[in-house]
Length: 151
Image (tube, rainbow, N blue to C red; front, side, top):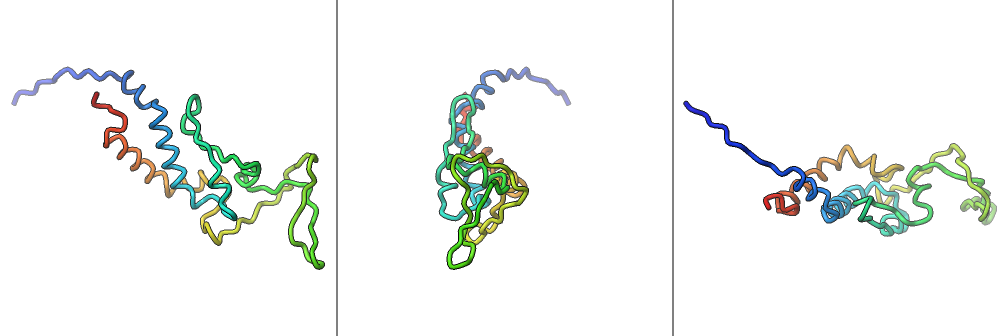
């Protein structure tokens, strides 16, 4: 049996440039956002809906743009917080505007009635279950010719 080795030339620089394509990373970010959606705490839906997927230098970065997103993401209550009373019962908390807020050491309790998997650091919480699905979606994108690797 005779075996011949053929010379294979792969232009890795050209293919690397295709993987760096902002369209690919936008697709990846949109797919990831859909997959981790059920881990995002939801009361009104504003936190999930108000997002920006960046292009350019930070391709595919998902930014939740509501002012309180960082507090919800890290899941720690910041204060000072003063109780709001109604009919002798605490119905909420108030933190004065313009005063610096500091971590209180207390964890947020998320309402899980609409998103049972809601948690802080939702992207990290979603990763074990959702990352394999994301990888399959990205592979399907490449297989469909989304990166034009054959050219």
